Length: 487
Ligand code: PLP
Image (cartoon, rainbow, N blue to C red; front, side, top):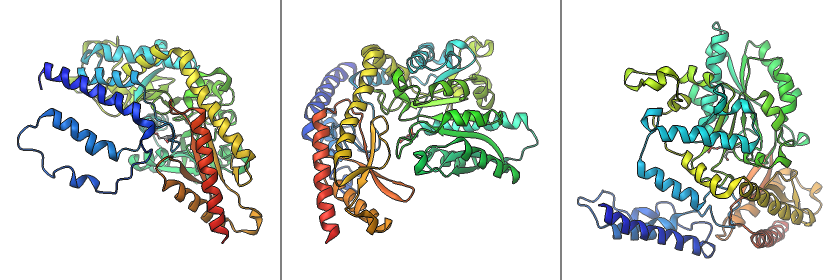
């Protein structure tokens, strides 16, 4: 394809994308294809000779569009919202056009410098302490691919810091701490690094958050067995129920364990810190005081297209001392002199995408006020939904609504006469029936043995009418599920 062919195909692609968004609401949320659907549509071998691009683009419509789950649909309430803005799409296009793996400052100065500046913009918008700013030249922010990568990097750095302070420690004694509600990223980091993980039980009465006493008890019990706590993954906004670990109590306990790194995983909820009214409830002052690292995904609720996991550390040296492996061919004058950040030493890979351009476009186009409005809108819409659930005679809230997430379930009349397993069956049937529809999508979870349904708001296209429509559908399905369950 030459430049003029690209110009023509590019305009056509933008037209197609616009048509897609204009028709989104009429399309099903859930794809109805069956596993293997693509085998009949795409040959098993790459073509011997190049094909005409018009045909390739046509096939995108025919082959790909039917197999998409529409995360941007206003009635998508599953998992968590995923950011998708036109600013983000355009930024991806520009970033792709320069195809630049800016691992060192000199590999493309603009890539590094924009990341340095925009990560400070984001830190300021979220209210993080200046210690986390790149401009502090001590701490700093880096874009990772995912919250799972951020945890992996934090664990590697925490292990390295711990081993430097306690060279006699055996690897097999090191323990990562998390809770039963921590995202699977904790367990995955343990698997990848061959480390132990301890998941502390959290309870309904504490709204599934980690409390200081539970943490202390786990540390003390493990220390008696010779185990060494070296990192705790605290969550601000768990995936299942939006629980917020009690960072205030955790910070108190960690004063007695100064070798333990506190990583805050706020992958989904962290962007709500942009709104000052939520900062106290999300423990921002304590995070600022005690967290060694903090992560939030702008690609979830934060309007930036996948991928964009923002990670900040209080001391950048902890990352670079653990991850700096510099063969001669990667040495640069600026790196040697320390006059510029070489982000390759802050993450796992070498090459990295030019992602900061997405945050730059989004924050400039929305402004901090526009970003805050987006967050507040999601919380307001979720409140409308959770109020409806509260008034319902057959549905009930399982936990207090958390920001833009409601967790609920069917409570049958005279629930006390049924076993937990029977009520779980009812809720599974309810969720299966909802999942058989293509006009709405919600996911389920299990909170300490109880099956619940989650409604996660946050797509920028969701309006009050979609929430009310969703509630109507959910209540109808719940009512039918109870009827058939009682028979
Ligand atoms: N942490 C929390 C609290 C999440 O909700 C999620 C995603 O659902 C993750 C981590 C995983 O994020 P990632 O896909 O970026 O690794």
